[in-house]
Image (spheres, one colour):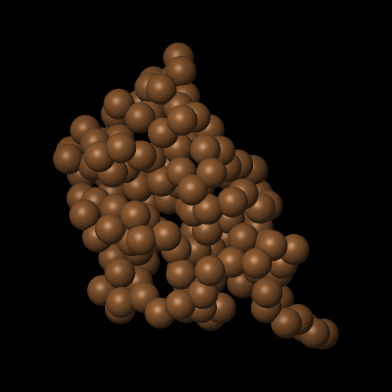
Amino acid sequence: MYFPDMGEECQVGRGPEVRAVGWLDIAHPFTRGAVEPSFVEALQQHVKTAWAPFAAAGPHFCQFCPTGPGQRPAGGAGNVWIPSAHHLFIAPELIVHYITAHGYRPPDTFIEAVLACPPQKSPEYIERLRPFYTRVYPGADLPIP
């Protein structure tokens, strides 16, 4: 499912502080470029341990991977929430695959936010997330991991 980078909505959130990142599809061009290995490692760790406030609706499969008989493209159903000082970045877990396999370069503000983000589920992470969560998901209680 496609949402433009830095748009204010994605499959699992919307609002003036939300920033969608990495919601790619084959019908829309995307920015390509190198990223630092330290960013990829940090993002992989966030995705691997991602805090999930609710279950995903189902898997999404990479539209850029060639497929043939018996082959299945990379897929994922999870998402990752990265709170920064001014935005709540939300990306699908496939973002790591898009970066490492297809050369996708996320916006610099997302890269900076990932590198500055405390570990998922940590008390500091929850405190950074809390103000966004109550505005993006009004009336919902913040599920504390």
